[in-house]
Amino acid sequence: MDEQLKLWIKQFQQDKDADALGNLKEHCAHMIEPLIVEFTEKYGEEAGVLLRSKWDKRFFFIFSKYQLNVGLSLESFVQNTYRFYFMQLLRKAGYMN
Image 1: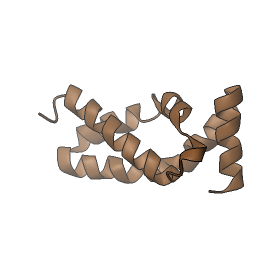
Image 2: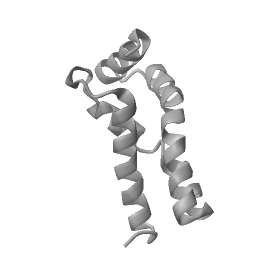
Image 3: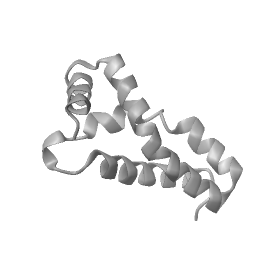
Image 4: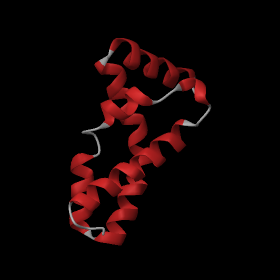
């Protein structure tokens, strides 16, 4: 993992640094967008609008849980965590049974 990413994660987790969190959001947006597209194709435009409006609501919480020393790549963590989160959102909104 890039040293700058590690620094942002540490700054956010240790100091709740808002700039570091913003940088992480910007960096991770490209990892999250394909999931939004996937769910939009499966459940329709309204589902995509819902996910786009909510993806950053839990970003703070999600990144407070990421562990640098576990060895799971940032991309795998983001995609797996967001897939689960998006499925919860869609289920609550009635898109999934």
